[in-house]
Every structure is written in structure tokens, then in C-alpha cells.
Amino acid sequence: MIALRGVRVRYGAHVVLDGFDLELPDGSITALTGPNGSGKTTVARVLLGLVRPDRGVVVGTAGLRRAAVFQEDRLCTRLSAVDNVRLVLGSARDAAAGRAALDALAAVGLSGRDVVVPVRDLSGGQRRRVAIARALAVDADLVVLDEPFTGLDADVRPLLTERVRERCHGRTTLLVTHDPDDVARVGARPVALRSAAPVPVGVGTGRGGPAADVGS
Ligand SMILES: Nc1ncnc2c1ncn2[C@@H]1O[C@H](COP(=O)(O)OP(=O)(O)OP(=O)(O)O)[C@@H](O)[C@H]1O
Ligand SMILES: [Mg+2]
Image 1 (tube, rainbow, N blue to C red):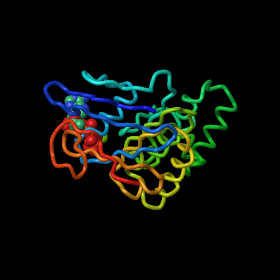
Image 2: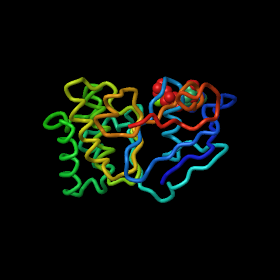
Image 3: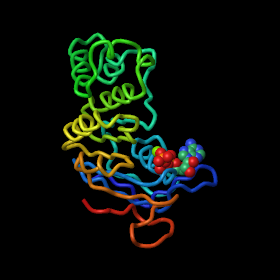
Image 4: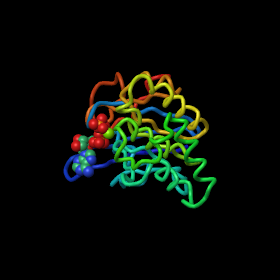
């Protein structure tokens, strides 16, 4: 079990999370929803070890192999899609890594020219798919997906949600999303963040409550 317990994060005087609790059951997908600015990306960054809480603890993440789709793509823009994915698969000269990268990209609907030109020459939605392919290519223990489907058109979304469902099956996963359809399609357990501090759903307002399980 990976868990955040009593976590406080602040940026200067701005307290974003306070007394925040979240449990990610082993091997299943938890979907974190909530309004803009409520702290979802901050939770993702805490799980990835990129933000250190000034109070509280993060348990269960030591030594885990982590993979992420960040809210922004964070691709190497001068490299091709294949080379971006190869970077997380080991040696760039390894033929098996090259084939695995092509397979990972094909699974998100990218092939041909789209996977060999620099990713800066792709559309925003195509770059998003590369970022998803890269995260899902890794055999990670913990997968953090921060609004991975943003910018994807309705036609391609089912393919991508299905790919996430398949690849994250059996892996402990946090999916940040605003879309209840995504939650259902990937078979995630939904948890809600409300306001600038976590508040249990249906339990009024206040700061410091746990993220609320909103049913599945
Ligand atoms: N590096 C930072 N420095 C200062 N404030 C920050 C920083 N990162 C986030 N914040 C603030 O923390 C709050 C929570 O931000 P966060 O990005 O976690 O929200 P979010 O729920 O992911 O929002 P969105 O749905 O827009 O992505 C916001 O008020 C934001 O302005
Ligand atoms: Mg965010």
C-alpha cells in the first residue's frame, strides 16, 4: 500500500495540502478528481518525490520504479517519438528497445512519419500520445498520470483509455482527471479533492480532511 498521511505542502505562505491523507491500493488504479488549483498535480509530484511535504509522511514508495505523464508533455522536442520512448527503455543502440518503442507508439495509434520526425513537428495531441506511450512503455511499480488525455480528440480517447487500463492493470496507479468517463473507462476508484484543501465529499467544508472515496 502506498499512502500519504497527514501531508502538508505549501508554496511560500500558500498552503495547498494540509493534513492530507490518500491511500493507493496495491495494483489498482485510483482516479483523483477536483477543481483547478485544488492540488492534484501537487499530490502527483509528492508521489513522484519531486515535492517534499513539510509535514506528514509518504509510505510505500521507497525503491519503486516510477513512470509518469506530467501535466505538460516534457518530451525532448528535438528527438523523434521513437527516440523519446527509447530513452526510458535502455540503450538507444539496443534493437529490442527500438522495437519495443515502435510497439508502444503503435499501441497509441502512432506510426510511420509521426514516429520518426522530431516531436516538435507533431501536433499537440500527437505529442500527448507520445508522452503516454513513453510512460506506459516502462515496467513501473507506480504510475502517475496527470491529466494524460487532455487535448486528445473524442475518437482517439477510447484507444488511449483502453491502453492505460491494460498497461496499468496490476500496477499501483494514480490517474488525475476531470472526466468521469475516463474514470469509468479505465476502471478506477474515484477520489475527490475539493477547494484549495482536501475536504471529504458531503462532509461540509474545512481544511485538512482526507481525500474522499466517492464510490466506484
Ligand atoms: N511551484 C509553485 N509555486 C507556487 N505555487 C504553486 C506552485 N505549484 C502550484 N502552486 C499553487 O498550488 C495550488 C495547487 O496547484 P496544483 O497544480 O497542484 O493544482 P491542480 O489541482 O493540479 O490544478 P489544475 O486542475 O489546474 O491542474 C494552486 O493554487 C497553484 O497556484
Ligand atoms: Mg494539475
